[in-house]
Length: 130
Image (tube, helix red, strand yellow):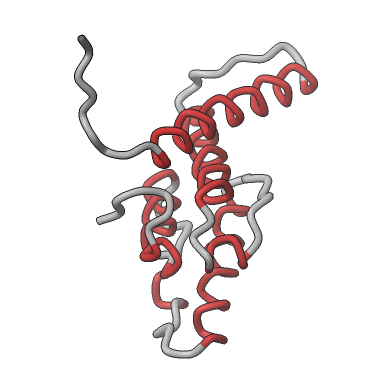
C-alpha cells in the first residue's frame, strides 16, 4: 500500500502501472517488467512505465529520476495527468477548441496536484477545532 506521494515503494512502478492498466486495460504488458535487482532493471521498468503512460496520451513532464527518487511533486503531476486522461474517457470534460482544451487540462492538473501535494505533505493528524 502507498502511504503518500513520498513513499519509496512508488519507485518499483507497480503502483503506477496498475493505475495505467486500470485506465485502459491491456495497455501494460507486465511480462516486460524486469526483476529490478540491478540499477539497469530498475531504470528499464521506470522507462516502460513512462512509455505506457505516453500510450494513453499523457504528456509526460516526469523524468525517470523523479520516479526513482519518489519525488512527490512530479509523481503528483504524473498522477494528475493520468487522472485527467481517465476523466476524458468518461466525457466529464468538454471544450470548444484545442486551446480551451489545453487550458482546461493544465488548470485541472495544477489544481489537482496542488491539493494532492499539500495533503501528502501535511501531517496525518486530526486537528481539533476550538
